[in-house]
Length: 202
Image (cartoon, rainbow, N blue to C red):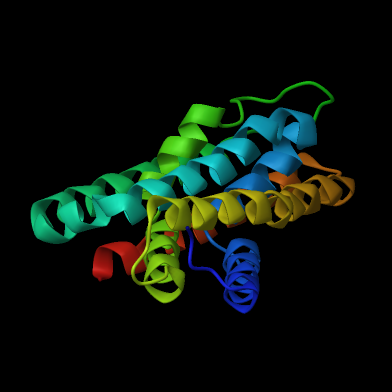
């Protein structure tokens, strides 16, 4: 039997909304995908983020975080592999194309699996997951409690992250020249690169 009260659950939902909708690598990347590839082609990326993060919260909540806490070398590897991958993704966004078409551009959007795996090396995802589990997981807790947190995050994340993708798609109207699109893509890439700094400096 789970230990969540209605007030406890509502407080967590508010936390999930705020942490899901605020800027971070996922939202920057889905905004770029929405602009460059459109909503339909960005759906696997969107579902990969939300379901992948939900799974990460669940796996972390049932004990995986203790493994990382006991193995500093794993934290170090995760930090630098994540930073390198973010840098590669930023370059990919910057070079994603100089013109919009109805069908495709140079490159492609992230797949479901790529977006899901990315959560494990996303610094903001780790901070949010550990913060949510620490602040909202009942004590004592059961697997069902962790599953509720993970499920709420996946459901809440869908509209919150989708808003960023739709915002990117709406910006298409302003991207009426290759130069403007280049500026947008490289600005997005620089923002993503900037998000790496706290990760490697910490």
